[in-house]
Amino acid sequence: MVSFSIIVTSLGFLILACVVAFAWAPMLTTILYRGKILRTGDHRFTIPLPGRQEKHGTPIMGGLLVVVTVAVLSFLFNWNQRFTWVPIGVMLLSSALGGIDDILNIYGSKRLMRSLERTMTLARVHRDWWMRWYYRISIPWVAYKRFFFHMGSYPGKGIQAHEKILFQFIAGTITAWWIFAKLGPEWKVIWLPWSGELSLGIFLVPLIILTVMATANAVNIADGLDGLAGGTLLTAFGGLLMLSWIQGNVSFAILNAMVIGSLFTYTYFNIKPARFQMGDVGSLGLGALLAVMSIAQNRIAVLPLFGFIFFIELASVIIQSIGKHILNRRILILAPLHHHFEARGWSEEKIVMRAWVLNAIAVMIGVWVALH
Image (cartoon, rainbow, N blue to C red; front, top):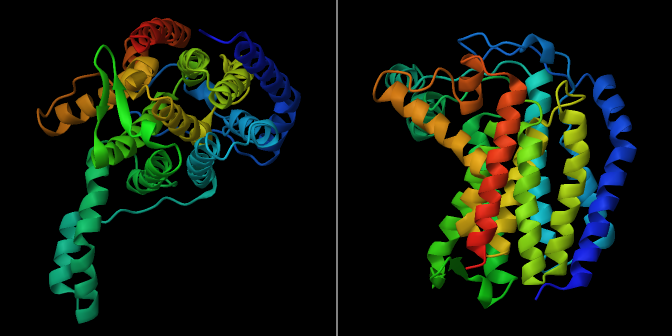
């Protein structure tokens, strides 16, 4: 039976987070404008999209509104070594990575990427023997970088995709350690609907790492239209909040509620025309937190439903890359999927609100499945 007190407590913190976020949102906007943390020209699109020019000059890193609010309120009111240290820590680590990327994309210089062929040539013909050895040793690393470039990663000024993957691997590893070392033996199995629990043993570790990496990147990819990521994250964490009520975990319920409260405020300011945009600082941090909370609440099996739109967006990028490099043709006009619909003439509002509705439906199905 769901405890009435846990609902009252978590809703109180939801309201608190919403109010606190509203209180300091103007200060954040001022800081971003004064620091000139603003969206600049977008050069990634081979096909012009309507409304892109209107977004230039909009502050990015608006996701700090959620990340900072949740972190500070958690430290003050919900700092639990067993249940909240690692989720907040993983969120902050991923947010720091995203924040550095956001800043470098504005103030950094364009980074060059040497081709694999060039590296192999230098490994054979460079006049210095020690440089030849350097290039030979670096061939696997260059091949690793080029893989993500061919997958469609845009080599801009910021942190490159291959570097983000390494940091996300670290975040996933921290989560796996936490599950195994801190939460007790009951967390070392995964729940499956209608089947009970499945013990994966040590194989749970790569599953956790892959889940954190995939979810963080999926949310990051979906953050391309005003309101899309914020509204979809609202429904995703709403599903987790309901599950935490049913499971009776007060710490998880408060954490989910605070995320929702601050997301309400962020989405209010992010609805088109956006006062500010989430940026990687928000999308990577909240994507990682969504994965960690799904794992911690032992409902990783329904994460694809809670983050339905995010994983559809991620799949569209993978499908587009397969079409480009294997079939030698475009599957979509543009990837990720929301840009495909933009190119087809759909308005931004239509895409975003339909995404909200579809994800809400998927979350309702996910909660229903999670109760079996």
